[in-house]
Length: 116
Length: 110
Image (cartoon, rainbow over all chains, first blue to last red; front, side):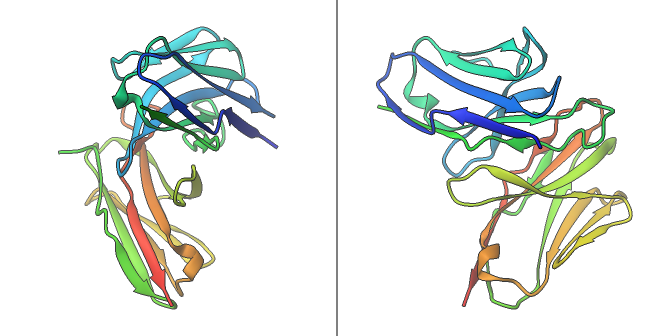
């Protein structure tokens, strides 16, 4: 069966510090991968998505970046965090369009970031 | 107009009640529809996909109304454990990436 893990689960970072969140998927190949952010009391905001290794699309201009060095690995980074980067970050995967279950997203456990 | 809209609630209902949520979408070319459940401070989890003919999973029934562009989720015999936020997601109409609503909060009390 497919599993998705992301880490760290919780982190508190000072303004201006770097960030690295990692996400890995097991049990599937060539997944679409996504990074979402959910601010307190807000909806899910799509940050990045990837359809393959090295292929990243950004939905919202910001000081964050994403990379996909391997098929089932997705990394969210920042060189300098802002206060507004605080939130709940969620990695997700889905099957490719045209495959059974395409469109259904499966989320990791989330990473709760507080920038002070 | 937002692409996907939900009443944020909260819907406060007693155990055993029947409760229904709607979710409206703006893109008439949308093709796939989903309901997710999100517990407090946890990740969303897929509850059910919504099929054109409607579908049922135990106490949960999902319906699609294409003419009026909304989907619904009906929960019968509410349990305390049903307390959560219910997110709808809509996909299609030129994008394979689902767009999420902000969610509807449900509180089931004794």
